[in-house]
Length: 433
Image (cartoon, rainbow, N blue to C red; front, top):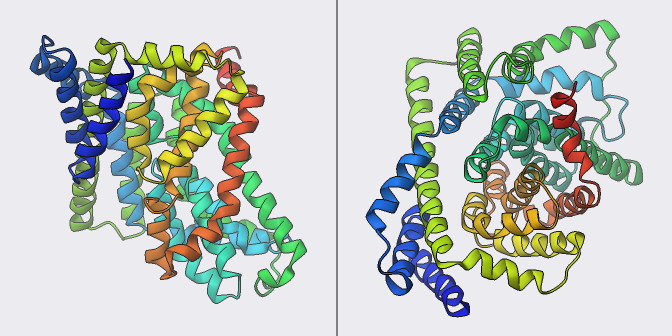
């Protein structure tokens, strides 16, 4: 079995190292393994079955809709509205407008499902505005990189949908499980920014002009469209009115209405958004088909049982197992995009974690956070690339600025490993009102 494991690593490195698409690379790896060690497997039949089972899953329908909604919102003036609506409320908060990236990303993540889209939408206004107001450049870019990852953790989340389909877990339960961890992580980012600002006031720009309470309330009107969209998408799901797929359709309709009201959504913009969403969904669909096919092949070869048995033989405690997996995913995230990390490792790591006493829902939140970490891990991190395009800073400088927020994510993973109730409390409350 060790020979098969080495063959898997070698074939995957060889095939993916040629630059071939990840989905095709996974299919090729599975086919080569089967040809070497199980030539009697009906490969074409297996591939056809996995393609059909993966792409016609009802849960998968929510994925293109949420991506389409994010693409539409990216073409509206939501980012300007977030800045103008939140700024008056932050005058007396330690760190002042430095918090606006975290709050903006938290709100936008509630209707987006993409980390890169959250970073780009919020950052294209806040980054330039804060730097021009005298805020520390590294604090601005670091907080944007860290907070942008909340697009994966705060529901709705495209990564959660993909994980739910692969792990055969309820998408709605995963969405509910992401609420408290997402809010706590946002609070952690804001706490760090506040402490840095208190320790070194020069990091924060000019004092904001005073505003009355009435003026603050009036400023909230700019957030009205986004808050109504959040209520429609998230409220319809948690209120039992709509399934995740139906809520995604509500979100698309709401995003179109916002674009029309703001007079930013033209027919050409809508067509462009649809094309971008179709491109993203085609890429994700191919990766998922390849991952499910490879998972089926290695299952026939008995690899998951072998690797699980080997790691169990190490005698690790549940907490130590999570620490080892965290290190493993950090290393993997430096050379591979987050989605690839999930689809390639899930067939092996999920049984290990469940054997250690953690649930599928808990592991879903764990895997989302480590994917977030991959988003800010050079050289592949998508969020770092987005911020580089926004600010023009070097990748090395952005990476250094992001490191404190990366360490916060690491600490948060260990926190939920020690206290799994952080993940389970909201789904349990909703299941037993």
